[in-house]
Image 1 (cartoon, helix red, strand yellow):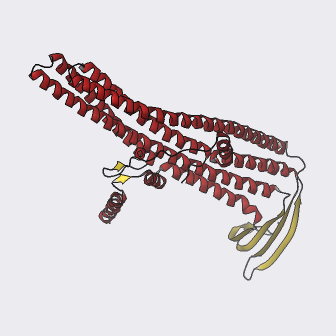
Image 2 (cartoon, helix red, strand yellow):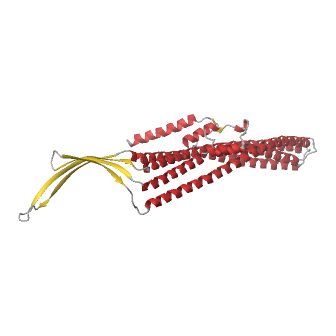
Image 3 (spheres, rainbow, N blue to C red):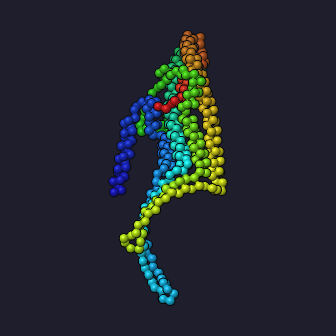
Length: 430
């Protein structure tokens, strides 16, 4: 049996890994990466469990709207010495008694105590729902940011690979010139140094890709069982952002999940204040029971029914302290909400300005790349014509590599800040 169970578990695990490998495409898009994260990330399961807990609390607080019905039954055997008359000797007696019944209790009216608690529990559930949405948005943002970083470092690798290729060409040219006596030994040595530097940069860039890949998989909460690539989003047109700053702030205050959760928490605390104060008010309960009792069968039946009207007179200031506690909690929640709104507005404005700045850097760095390519072409022409030096080529090649990396960084920053801005506005959910 144990062997069969182990084989079954192994088959299930193997099948799940095989299906995951078959479903995983060779080249992941950002949308597919987000879908994988939403299906696998542990933080979403934690938030979903908290949401279910809040929902169960709503059901628990609504219990007072319904009657409480209990069934009971007992069979008691009694024995011992019995003395009926002091003048007579005591004797041993044994007898049984039987009892069974059904009882009901229903709150008729409690002047809003139950209603306040139910309203608070519903708002707490709403807050947990918004917390789940916030967690979901965080997962999406982190995956998209990690995806962009992955693409960015792949571009850097390409730039460094081109630099290595170019350095190898320059080394061959210097060696060829030195072999025929047209170039000094210095040119060869300088080219070898340049090639070594280019290789060092390439090694570092490839390691950055490996790290970015691990961070990307961590953001998805899933480690693919086989090799894959991600599609290059930098090759497509950079998405523009035309919304004004004031509109972005308004949208954020209306749609940001954290703010909606904070507002629901404030409403819940206000309902708890009312529920706590309502404990000063009376309660009306309906009680009823039907029982069967006796020492032998058939048992004798009996029923009771009535209303209980309870008025709290003095409870040692416990109700007043509960009201004060609820009021303090509500005030703290409102202050936290106000602080959160300020933080959100700051987040929106910072990322909005960063998007605009990165957009300008894209244009400037494109021009920088064009000029650096022309500068390298001129340096190579001077060198090939015998009037230039290898130092000029090295400087031009370094400038071009830096310009290309600057352009890649500008593209990465723009897309990253745009994602952060959409997250700050509460519109990142897919």
